[in-house]
Length: 309
Image (cartoon, rainbow, N blue to C red; front, side):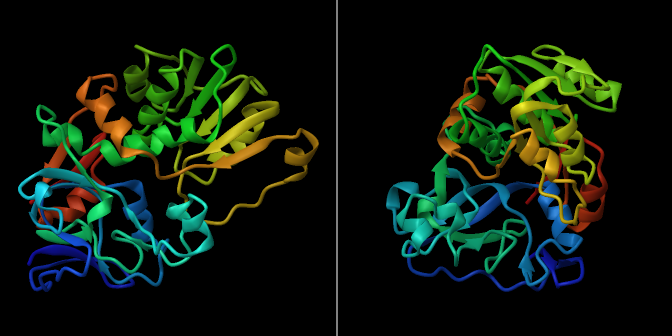
């Protein structure tokens, strides 16, 4: 089958990838659409040096075979992390941190940048009727933004800043805006900041020590240092960027100013599907390519790029 394969050094378009074979508890999914995430770009830079296989984890698919017969022919999206169910993290309600988890397109599990994929059946979520593929494709990144609300209590009578003006920032900002909080988005690109104006104040430079909550969504090595300058004493920095690099930070200011840093990634799918269906989150259209044109998709400056399969 056709697909985009990471060989340990870079991504390759191939037409000779073997068809996936279902294991116990897995479903076979025909991929209808898949999308490029910044994490996929980081994989190419060495974020997952031990991974070899089909890339990609954001997808819309159709179930062709499954142990749950009610799923047959259903359109689905799916979560990334297949947990063991036995380790301390699985037993204490933290399966996305399972010690031996397999992660779609990143660790021990072929992903969605191909014609077909197998996935643990309990990771699948049925897409509601009336929700087009082109919008459902945003379920996984929106779920990741919603994870913030499961991790910390956002007091709507305080203020917050989102640092960044890209895809992750737009999703995170809209989720925070749903709380009614006084929200400011700090970015570098006036044309991108236009998208945030319906629900947030937009600036190109934030007030130093001005925000109780700062969500770092830049995808850049400068993001966390900037967030630490912007957050108030005893405030909270929410680290959403997955940056495959090393930083040099003076952590004394974190201790002295009693700043909380919260790492945040995968989140709940069902609320994300509900918000998308109800139109509570508005996103620009995805730009679609053929799999063989993956370099164009990875280089695209569109809000979101991906593939029709």
